[in-house]
Image (cartoon, rainbow, N blue to C red; front, side, top):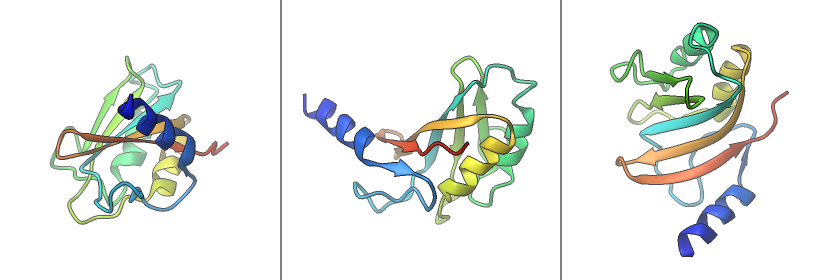
Length: 124
């Protein structure tokens, strides 16, 4: 029950229109970000989005395929974050939108287990 209340509180209280992913829950930067993307179901179509996101300065290109794992069956983009780099949520949203998709939710992962759910404001 406590987990459910925490998730509901996070989901209803935080909207990302710009800035970084440092949140009230933790002042640590995430190690990975999993972004749920509306309408991303074709790998060929999502190629432009991949290129836009992997060019962002906070993407650690030593992991995955240039720091990005695209999962079109789940409609998600997993991004590995460079240690010590701030993640600019506004630039991330713009990179996804430029590729023709809409970012919905971001799941922040630290130490492989701690998760936090954040929402993007509508960017369109």
